[in-house]
Length: 167
Length: 240
Image 1 (spheres, rainbow over the protein chains, first blue to last red):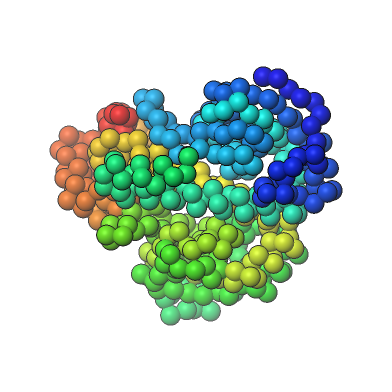
Image 2: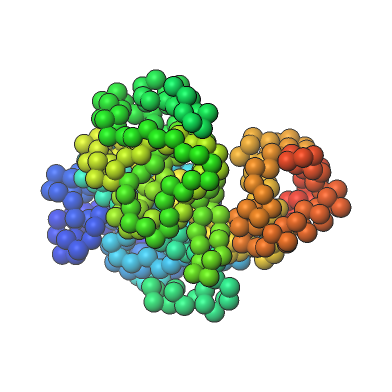
């Protein structure tokens, strides 16, 4: 894992298109100070289901597959997250173990923010806190869609259909 | 004041004795004062539908008393119960925040007191009170956590027996009975509703309970279920 000490979000051209990243200048300044930027290779596991949550990961470039696992190791893929998404948010906010695993499917750039820093940042920046609430609501909508697909679809074939378009 | 459903309605959140124990309700005085001015305290009988899946979001419902069944439905009418919400939970939260349709249906299982807040009032309240915004983020996180648990249980369990065993073990954990050798459970749902929780038929649930009783894994006394062989139940739950 190669870590880059300085990489400002102010220089990111994609920022206006990404809900969480498009913060007011003062919030972005504060965010720049608490983040750790890393260039990671395909296959890197960002976090594992069941492990204590350390913080959140913002995907700058690249995609990550999100999955859950049974005790016997059987894996169920939930979806593929794209650039601009914040991963590990709900576990970090609730201070619970990560409820799923995230693995990079491309070489990518990821920003990591420690739980303690994130909570302080959200307390100080009301706009960012509202963004987080919006992101969590979207995550929950996606999760309910997945529950509907897994729990109410009769055939395995039709379970796959809504999933193909998203990844 | 007594309501028609025998509920002792708590008119003001300031006088609610349970506030301190509830994640969303335990707000600082300033935020609580604002919340008081935008909420409508209402009482509902058993079986009332608070909101329906697919409906445009009107606002949030803070459950003060009673229990509410949360379910989703397929186009052919098959119902899946996601959970039974307990007092202190905020219902319709993600739909009200995002402006998307309610993603599930909420129906009261008991007479309930619910504090309703209109969507626009709620969004303004969140913008003005950072502490409340953080509490909402925590509530949404808890809900996401349980949705993932539900996906895991539905998507990775092979048989209905496995799902039922997992559900019973979950309930014992929630009731604080998990550490006991022979945990006790008060079954608050019918076989039909349990079937809707694990995505199977009522007949299968009845057959599975009969089988568990025959194998002396559980013992029923009225609506109370005694788990006599926890190890065997755990073995069924981890079969896949």
